[in-house]
Length: 167
Image 1 (tube, rainbow, N blue to C red):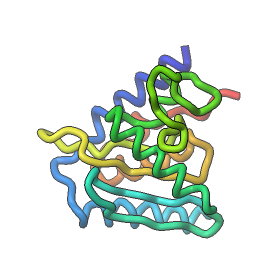
Image 2: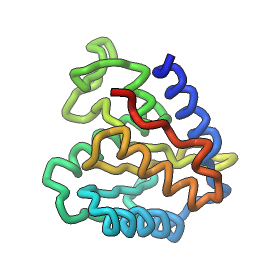
Image 3: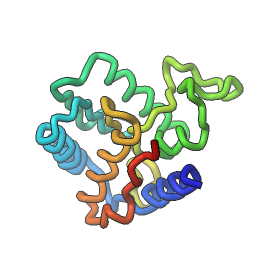
């Protein structure tokens, strides 16, 4: 039942974490907040925030590596195509090889099932972009983005936080 609970909670996150408006200044505020947390907690991540037509914020933290931007790019492509968080896609698809089913026609060089991409949704406009984090285990990448969005939007993150992963 934990899988279904996680999917339901991520759907709740996606429904709750909606912006009244989104622009370059907001992207900078959120990106900077994630960057500040990464510096404080020594998180080896990259942060990529963009609308679907252009990049708005990018930062690579100490310890991140050359593959992180490519993982983020592929996560961004998944959000663009499916309009939902990549971690939700991971849980729904249950594909340990990180690829989509062959019938989807999605090349693994451009699409990956990995958490850390979250849709930027604007009230009245829908999904217009994505916030991607890469460098941590996927549930943690997802959590970093959700925490930042909760803080920015004034939403109580305790109600939306995924529980620690069962081992």
